Figure 1 (spheres, each protein chain N blue to C red):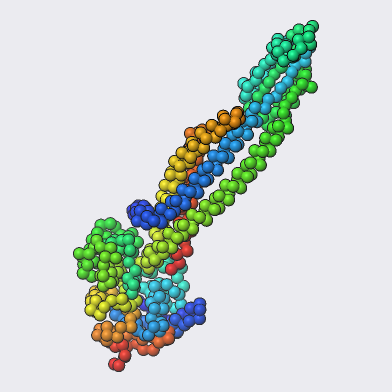
Figure 2: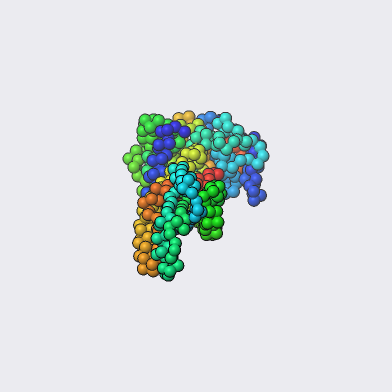
Length: 303
Length: 228
């Protein structure tokens, strides 16, 4: 097909969007509604996953050196931790010196009598390490145990907690995937039904084109452009609507969290996700528009 | 030009559309296909334009073997034909001009060609002044003229008309037939299926009569009753 013809057909498809106002509106409304729901579901998924991942980040590897560790042994461990941070294995860490441990113990213990006779020398150096990737914990702990200065009995990591959260993330991901798949199937059915209705209303037109000698692509192309435009428009409108709705929901939930004093729950800012949601919306809307038109026209081409 | 060799069409529901029809129509002829409803007139035309394919036998049109033609070639066959229907079949959301231009856009004619040919075609059918009107703003006769202009604009070798005057009053019908005659005078083969006796009798053209799918007579300068 010549470029000139493609341009002509693209123009034709664009014109058809407003010439068939009612049907365009019906298709647009369907796409808008579906993408809006899809957008909200995606946002819920992102929020839950982000919060669960954040919980994982809070888990720390805690370990203490032996009380009788030499200065050299202490320095070896300090160097290892510093190197691990430089290489990115460790995200951040807190160091607790013998003196700090002594002071903390004094603060924590209610009966000062218990502290009698104790000096900072009786306390061990401690580290509280946050790993960049919580799944590296086993390997990290194994390496710690190689140091003679580290008291291997005093390495703690809430492994169970990690596994619980990881399990939750996994289950949630499956559920999310299922919900999205169901949503997609429903929207494809809904949208192709609407488009089929549009095409059915114009089947005479398609028939006439066939009789005049138009080939299939000549007939199909304007419909595809039409579907694509409606899909694109639906995606953009849905993006606006989603961002508005999410703003309201976020404000509402934040107020609620504050009033019932839940801390640590953080709703993701829409701005951070805006582009991703837009891309998903546009891809989905345009694809649905194109596939819907293609399939619906196909049936009427056999004249 | 057009040749049916022992062509038979039996529809999937068992109805016989056409039975062992052998006939030849030469370039430049004007032919009426007549017969009662259900006699096979429409089937005859449908086989020519590949709306249906013969169950048995062969059909040749403008060099195409319609009986065993790949689907992808059908548009090219139809572009070599001009087709006019009883119900006009104009695109409702296009003006008279655009309806005619559409037939040229399909064959990817140059815009300058389109701008030149479309007014000529509309002029030929006497509708120059209604170029901008939509089908709904035109009378039946005018709509059929637009359909004729569309059928003619690509200079097809054959013009097929299926009951072209079925929805028109007698006066307008005669005008359309005169137009078809004029088109035929310019060298286009014209095939008209009709059951309007007065028209067939008045025009004294070749008449092919079908009855229950069979060709029962083929008369040069015939009439509806085939008295001569």
